[in-house]
Image (cartoon, rainbow, N blue to C red; front, side):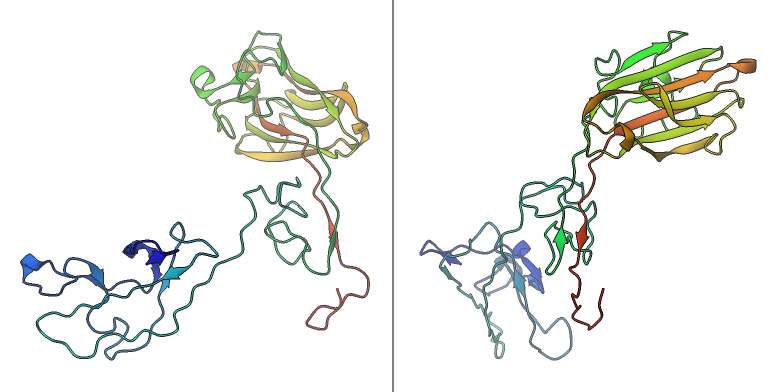
Length: 324
């Protein structure tokens, strides 16, 4: 192939993505007299049947040519001393290119990233916002609304930690990794290397992990990964407080107890969404009864953005004749 009048070069066999070459020709030393000896090529009978037939090959020219380039193809045909019959027919050669794709983004993250015209929090099609976050024909979509920034949401800064205030009546380490703390009969971190571990004491303990966050008026929920791999007695408790008010509570008799595997918990915090700072606290009290422990694991704390929503105007008729 020659591009824009340049020298001809051979297109590598790996670029043929559909119906590739059928063989690599034998070398001259193997008594092959074909001038294309040693090269990958189409050779022999049609691979899809006993009789010759038309087939279509697709060649990916990515990195070799660009839209607007002038391209010349040269087809090399070789025949050996056996003097075979009619060779290869070639017809309907076509060059095409796809429109430039959108710049890479996190479509479906409920944030309007560069190149996106909508983001409804998923990668589906047919709901107004496509799987590449473009408004679909006939639809109208609202912009997503921002959440709140939580510093070190996955505790990956480890201990000591400048973002989370920690207190423990037994001086226990609340931000853990597997090397320092073990796994507490659970998963350890949900992601990364660190997670928060409240409880775990064989004596009475009160532990709190907190951070003050400005919650915008667009926020709706506090979301976190939660695992309770071990509970000892019903008197052991875990709660989430906002400005000292309990918004989430479980005890040692809860159905979440003694189960390995993180679950996502969602708490409605819309009543605090006023653009002001609020203190979010994870709080646990355990008795250490009979030397047994209760373990409460937390990871990936977020106040996520709210996805945009899409609607069809009244009276729109789908192509199949049905109204929405």
